[in-house]
Image (tube, rainbow, N blue to C red):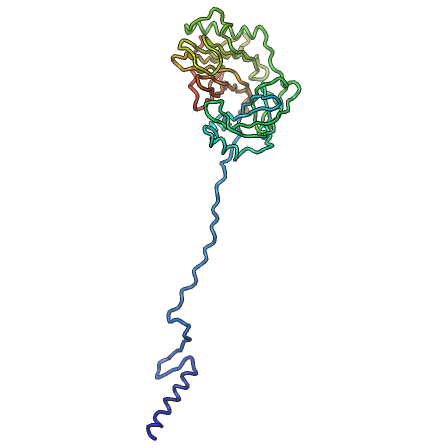
Length: 337
Protein backbone atom coordinates (compact mmCIF):
# COMPACT_ATOMS: atom_id res chain seq x y z
CA UNK A 1 0.00 0.00 0.00
CA UNK A 2 2.76 2.39 0.90
CA UNK A 3 4.56 1.57 -2.24
CA UNK A 4 1.53 2.23 -4.38
CA UNK A 5 0.86 5.60 -2.75
CA UNK A 6 4.44 6.68 -3.33
CA UNK A 7 4.07 6.06 -7.04
CA UNK A 8 0.86 8.05 -7.53
CA UNK A 9 2.41 11.56 -7.53
CA UNK A 10 4.88 10.51 -10.16
CA UNK A 11 2.14 9.24 -12.39
CA UNK A 12 0.30 12.53 -11.99
CA UNK A 13 3.34 14.44 -12.87
CA UNK A 14 3.87 12.42 -15.98
CA UNK A 15 0.28 12.95 -17.00
CA UNK A 16 0.58 16.69 -16.49
CA UNK A 17 3.88 16.85 -18.34
CA UNK A 18 2.49 15.23 -21.42
CA UNK A 19 -0.26 17.80 -21.57
CA UNK A 20 1.92 20.89 -21.48
CA UNK A 21 4.45 22.43 -23.84
CA UNK A 22 6.54 24.02 -21.09
CA UNK A 23 6.93 22.82 -17.56
CA UNK A 24 8.96 24.26 -14.73
CA UNK A 25 10.55 21.57 -12.65
CA UNK A 26 12.78 22.44 -9.76
CA UNK A 27 13.71 25.80 -11.25
CA UNK A 28 14.41 24.25 -14.63
CA UNK A 29 12.19 25.08 -17.57
CA UNK A 30 11.63 22.13 -19.82
CA UNK A 31 10.28 22.67 -23.31
CA UNK A 32 8.80 20.00 -25.52
CA UNK A 33 9.09 20.23 -29.32
CA UNK A 34 7.19 18.61 -32.05
CA UNK A 35 9.25 15.80 -33.57
CA UNK A 36 9.41 17.68 -36.85
CA UNK A 37 11.17 20.66 -35.27
CA UNK A 38 14.96 20.64 -35.31
CA UNK A 39 17.09 21.62 -32.39
CA UNK A 40 19.12 24.02 -34.51
CA UNK A 41 17.40 26.93 -36.20
CA UNK A 42 17.18 26.38 -39.96
CA UNK A 43 19.17 28.77 -42.11
CA UNK A 44 17.04 31.38 -43.85
CA UNK A 45 16.16 30.45 -47.41
CA UNK A 46 18.78 31.66 -49.87
CA UNK A 47 17.97 34.79 -51.75
CA UNK A 48 16.86 34.14 -55.26
CA UNK A 49 19.35 35.85 -57.52
CA UNK A 50 17.77 38.12 -60.05
CA UNK A 51 18.17 36.84 -63.56
CA UNK A 52 21.09 38.44 -65.42
CA UNK A 53 20.32 39.00 -69.08
CA UNK A 54 23.33 38.70 -71.36
CA UNK A 55 23.30 41.61 -73.82
CA UNK A 56 25.18 41.47 -77.10
CA UNK A 57 26.71 44.89 -77.85
CA UNK A 58 25.49 46.43 -81.06
CA UNK A 59 27.76 47.72 -83.81
CA UNK A 60 29.69 50.91 -83.03
CA UNK A 61 28.08 54.11 -84.29
CA UNK A 62 28.97 54.93 -87.86
CA UNK A 63 29.81 58.45 -88.94
CA UNK A 64 29.38 59.92 -92.39
CA UNK A 65 30.84 57.73 -95.14
CA UNK A 66 31.97 58.80 -98.61
CA UNK A 67 31.20 56.35 -101.44
CA UNK A 68 32.35 56.09 -105.05
CA UNK A 69 30.01 54.76 -107.71
CA UNK A 70 30.16 53.33 -111.21
CA UNK A 71 27.15 53.22 -113.45
CA UNK A 72 25.84 49.92 -114.83
CA UNK A 73 22.93 50.67 -117.15
CA UNK A 74 19.95 51.81 -115.09
CA UNK A 75 21.77 50.88 -111.90
CA UNK A 76 24.93 51.93 -110.12
CA UNK A 77 27.44 50.12 -107.93
CA UNK A 78 28.66 51.94 -104.82
CA UNK A 79 31.59 51.10 -102.56
CA UNK A 80 32.70 53.08 -99.49
CA UNK A 81 35.91 55.10 -99.70
CA UNK A 82 36.37 56.06 -96.06
CA UNK A 83 34.63 57.48 -93.02
CA UNK A 84 34.51 61.27 -92.77
CA UNK A 85 36.05 62.12 -89.41
CA UNK A 86 36.54 65.51 -87.71
CA UNK A 87 40.08 65.74 -89.09
CA UNK A 88 39.39 64.26 -92.53
CA UNK A 89 38.91 60.84 -94.06
CA UNK A 90 39.88 57.75 -92.07
CA UNK A 91 39.98 54.09 -93.21
CA UNK A 92 36.67 52.32 -92.82
CA UNK A 93 36.61 49.42 -90.36
CA UNK A 94 34.08 47.56 -92.48
CA UNK A 95 36.52 46.82 -95.29
CA UNK A 96 39.68 44.85 -95.88
CA UNK A 97 38.17 41.37 -95.81
CA UNK A 98 35.08 39.52 -96.96
CA UNK A 99 33.99 39.01 -93.33
CA UNK A 100 34.33 42.71 -92.48
CA UNK A 101 32.48 43.72 -95.64
CA UNK A 102 29.64 41.30 -94.93
CA UNK A 103 29.38 42.51 -91.33
CA UNK A 104 29.30 46.14 -92.48
CA UNK A 105 26.39 45.39 -94.79
CA UNK A 106 24.51 43.50 -92.05
CA UNK A 107 25.09 46.24 -89.46
CA UNK A 108 24.57 49.43 -91.45
CA UNK A 109 22.87 48.71 -94.79
CA UNK A 110 19.26 47.84 -95.51
CA UNK A 111 17.24 47.34 -98.63
CA UNK A 112 15.71 50.62 -99.71
CA UNK A 113 18.42 52.72 -98.06
CA UNK A 114 18.68 55.92 -100.06
CA UNK A 115 21.82 57.60 -101.38
CA UNK A 116 22.40 60.99 -102.97
CA UNK A 117 24.62 60.88 -106.06
CA UNK A 118 27.05 63.69 -106.88
CA UNK A 119 28.99 64.53 -110.01
CA UNK A 120 31.22 67.53 -110.58
CA UNK A 121 30.39 68.80 -107.09
CA UNK A 122 26.60 68.84 -107.59
CA UNK A 123 23.68 66.58 -106.76
CA UNK A 124 22.68 64.69 -109.89
CA UNK A 125 20.43 61.89 -108.69
CA UNK A 126 19.57 59.21 -106.17
CA UNK A 127 20.11 55.49 -105.65
CA UNK A 128 17.94 53.03 -103.75
CA UNK A 129 19.94 50.12 -102.31
CA UNK A 130 18.72 46.73 -103.42
CA UNK A 131 21.54 44.15 -103.22
CA UNK A 132 24.75 43.83 -101.23
CA UNK A 133 27.93 41.85 -101.86
CA UNK A 134 31.72 42.12 -101.61
CA UNK A 135 33.62 44.28 -104.10
CA UNK A 136 37.00 42.97 -105.29
CA UNK A 137 38.08 45.71 -107.70
CA UNK A 138 40.33 47.56 -105.25
CA UNK A 139 43.37 46.44 -103.31
CA UNK A 140 41.25 45.93 -100.19
CA UNK A 141 37.90 44.18 -100.24
CA UNK A 142 34.96 46.49 -99.66
CA UNK A 143 31.19 46.22 -99.19
CA UNK A 144 29.33 46.65 -102.47
CA UNK A 145 25.91 48.23 -102.84
CA UNK A 146 23.87 47.90 -105.99
CA UNK A 147 20.59 49.60 -106.79
CA UNK A 148 18.50 51.49 -109.30
CA UNK A 149 19.30 55.14 -109.99
CA UNK A 150 17.26 58.20 -110.88
CA UNK A 151 19.23 61.02 -112.54
CA UNK A 152 18.39 64.60 -113.40
CA UNK A 153 17.99 65.18 -117.17
CA UNK A 154 21.26 67.10 -117.44
CA UNK A 155 23.26 64.18 -116.00
CA UNK A 156 21.91 61.19 -117.92
CA UNK A 157 25.32 60.62 -119.54
CA UNK A 158 27.28 60.59 -116.25
CA UNK A 159 29.07 57.28 -115.64
CA UNK A 160 30.79 57.80 -112.27
CA UNK A 161 29.59 59.33 -109.01
CA UNK A 162 30.47 60.23 -105.48
CA UNK A 163 27.74 59.42 -103.00
CA UNK A 164 26.52 59.89 -99.44
CA UNK A 165 23.48 58.45 -97.71
CA UNK A 166 20.41 60.62 -98.20
CA UNK A 167 20.64 61.82 -94.60
CA UNK A 168 24.32 62.74 -94.88
CA UNK A 169 23.81 64.30 -98.29
CA UNK A 170 21.66 67.00 -96.72
CA UNK A 171 24.87 68.59 -95.40
CA UNK A 172 26.14 69.26 -98.93
CA UNK A 173 24.87 72.48 -100.55
CA UNK A 174 22.80 71.80 -103.64
CA UNK A 175 24.81 73.56 -106.33
CA UNK A 176 23.68 73.62 -109.97
CA UNK A 177 25.20 70.96 -112.18
CA UNK A 178 27.45 72.85 -114.59
CA UNK A 179 30.55 70.94 -115.77
CA UNK A 180 33.46 73.00 -117.08
CA UNK A 181 33.86 72.85 -120.84
CA UNK A 182 37.23 71.63 -122.09
CA UNK A 183 38.48 74.70 -123.92
CA UNK A 184 41.70 74.75 -125.92
CA UNK A 185 43.30 77.12 -123.41
CA UNK A 186 42.66 74.71 -120.54
CA UNK A 187 43.91 71.74 -122.55
CA UNK A 188 47.10 73.62 -123.39
CA UNK A 189 47.59 74.44 -119.71
CA UNK A 190 48.04 70.73 -118.90
CA UNK A 191 50.58 70.08 -121.65
CA UNK A 192 52.55 73.26 -120.92
CA UNK A 193 52.86 72.31 -117.25
CA UNK A 194 53.96 68.81 -118.24
CA UNK A 195 56.69 70.09 -120.56
CA UNK A 196 58.09 72.29 -117.79
CA UNK A 197 58.07 69.35 -115.41
CA UNK A 198 59.91 67.04 -117.82
CA UNK A 199 62.63 69.66 -118.20
CA UNK A 200 62.85 70.10 -114.43
CA UNK A 201 63.32 66.44 -113.48
CA UNK A 202 65.00 65.25 -116.66
CA UNK A 203 62.42 62.54 -117.33
CA UNK A 204 62.45 60.63 -120.60
CA UNK A 205 60.77 62.91 -123.08
CA UNK A 206 58.26 61.66 -125.63
CA UNK A 207 58.24 62.98 -129.17
CA UNK A 208 54.96 64.73 -128.38
CA UNK A 209 53.58 65.24 -124.87
CA UNK A 210 50.08 64.71 -126.23
CA UNK A 211 51.08 61.14 -127.09
CA UNK A 212 51.40 60.24 -123.40
CA UNK A 213 48.46 62.23 -122.00
CA UNK A 214 45.92 59.57 -121.01
CA UNK A 215 43.34 61.72 -119.23
CA UNK A 216 42.54 65.40 -118.69
CA UNK A 217 39.71 66.99 -116.67
CA UNK A 218 38.65 70.46 -115.51
CA UNK A 219 36.55 71.49 -112.54
CA UNK A 220 36.01 74.41 -110.19
CA UNK A 221 37.30 73.63 -106.70
CA UNK A 222 36.21 76.95 -105.18
CA UNK A 223 33.23 79.06 -106.22
CA UNK A 224 34.20 81.93 -108.48
CA UNK A 225 37.83 80.93 -109.08
CA UNK A 226 39.36 79.77 -112.38
CA UNK A 227 39.03 76.02 -113.05
CA UNK A 228 41.54 73.50 -111.78
CA UNK A 229 43.07 71.40 -114.55
CA UNK A 230 44.18 67.83 -113.76
CA UNK A 231 45.83 65.41 -116.16
CA UNK A 232 47.51 62.00 -116.19
CA UNK A 233 50.54 61.29 -118.38
CA UNK A 234 51.92 57.77 -118.77
CA UNK A 235 55.18 57.06 -120.57
CA UNK A 236 55.69 53.64 -122.18
CA UNK A 237 52.58 52.16 -120.54
CA UNK A 238 48.80 52.42 -120.52
CA UNK A 239 46.45 53.75 -117.86
CA UNK A 240 45.35 50.28 -116.79
CA UNK A 241 46.01 47.78 -114.01
CA UNK A 242 48.82 45.49 -115.14
CA UNK A 243 52.58 45.05 -115.32
CA UNK A 244 54.77 47.67 -116.93
CA UNK A 245 58.40 47.72 -117.99
CA UNK A 246 61.05 49.26 -115.79
CA UNK A 247 61.53 52.49 -117.73
CA UNK A 248 57.83 53.42 -117.68
CA UNK A 249 56.67 56.33 -115.53
CA UNK A 250 53.46 58.19 -114.74
CA UNK A 251 52.76 61.80 -113.82
CA UNK A 252 49.56 63.16 -112.32
CA UNK A 253 49.45 66.96 -112.50
CA UNK A 254 47.14 69.59 -111.07
CA UNK A 255 47.38 73.18 -112.33
CA UNK A 256 45.73 76.36 -111.09
CA UNK A 257 45.65 80.03 -112.06
CA UNK A 258 45.31 81.55 -108.60
CA UNK A 259 46.78 84.95 -109.48
CA UNK A 260 45.22 85.32 -112.90
CA UNK A 261 48.67 85.35 -114.51
CA UNK A 262 48.65 81.88 -116.04
CA UNK A 263 48.45 78.27 -114.96
CA UNK A 264 51.12 76.87 -112.66
CA UNK A 265 51.54 73.38 -111.29
CA UNK A 266 50.00 72.99 -107.82
CA UNK A 267 50.50 69.23 -107.39
CA UNK A 268 52.52 66.53 -109.11
CA UNK A 269 52.79 62.81 -108.39
CA UNK A 270 55.75 61.46 -110.38
CA UNK A 271 56.36 57.71 -110.20
CA UNK A 272 59.12 55.82 -111.95
CA UNK A 273 58.09 52.18 -111.99
CA UNK A 274 61.56 50.82 -111.32
CA UNK A 275 61.94 53.04 -108.24
CA UNK A 276 58.48 53.80 -106.83
CA UNK A 277 56.42 50.93 -108.19
CA UNK A 278 53.53 51.39 -110.58
CA UNK A 279 50.82 53.78 -109.41
CA UNK A 280 49.23 55.87 -112.16
CA UNK A 281 46.66 58.22 -110.64
CA UNK A 282 43.59 59.45 -112.50
CA UNK A 283 40.89 61.90 -111.54
CA UNK A 284 37.62 60.34 -110.38
CA UNK A 285 35.53 63.29 -109.15
CA UNK A 286 35.46 66.14 -106.66
CA UNK A 287 33.22 67.24 -103.79
CA UNK A 288 33.44 69.46 -100.72
CA UNK A 289 33.30 66.52 -98.33
CA UNK A 290 34.39 68.28 -95.13
CA UNK A 291 32.45 71.52 -95.68
CA UNK A 292 35.49 73.83 -95.66
CA UNK A 293 34.48 75.60 -98.87
CA UNK A 294 37.04 73.82 -101.09
CA UNK A 295 36.33 70.57 -102.89
CA UNK A 296 38.44 67.47 -102.30
CA UNK A 297 39.69 65.49 -105.31
CA UNK A 298 39.10 61.73 -105.31
CA UNK A 299 41.61 59.68 -107.31
CA UNK A 300 41.79 56.11 -108.51
CA UNK A 301 45.39 54.89 -108.62
CA UNK A 302 46.19 51.97 -110.92
CA UNK A 303 48.99 49.61 -109.95
CA UNK A 304 50.36 46.35 -111.30
CA UNK A 305 47.86 44.05 -109.57
CA UNK A 306 45.03 46.28 -108.35
CA UNK A 307 43.95 49.86 -107.83
CA UNK A 308 43.39 51.95 -104.73
CA UNK A 309 41.72 55.22 -103.75
CA UNK A 310 43.24 58.44 -102.48
CA UNK A 311 42.14 62.04 -102.02
CA UNK A 312 43.75 65.45 -102.38
CA UNK A 313 42.87 68.57 -100.42
CA UNK A 314 43.82 72.19 -100.99
CA UNK A 315 46.24 73.70 -98.49
CA UNK A 316 47.24 77.25 -99.33
CA UNK A 317 48.27 77.41 -102.96
CA UNK A 318 48.98 73.67 -103.30
CA UNK A 319 47.18 70.35 -103.30
CA UNK A 320 48.33 67.67 -100.85
CA UNK A 321 47.43 64.03 -100.37
CA UNK A 322 45.05 63.75 -97.41
CA UNK A 323 43.93 60.12 -97.63
CA UNK A 324 45.21 56.92 -99.20
CA UNK A 325 43.97 53.34 -98.86
CA UNK A 326 46.27 51.52 -96.42
CA UNK A 327 47.03 48.94 -99.12
CA UNK A 328 48.11 51.54 -101.69
CA UNK A 329 51.66 52.56 -102.55
CA UNK A 330 52.76 55.95 -101.18
CA UNK A 331 52.52 58.87 -103.56
CA UNK A 332 55.72 60.43 -104.88
CA UNK A 333 55.24 64.21 -104.84
CA UNK A 334 57.76 66.26 -106.80
CA UNK A 335 58.55 69.95 -106.90
CA UNK A 336 57.65 72.11 -109.87
CA UNK A 337 60.13 74.92 -110.32
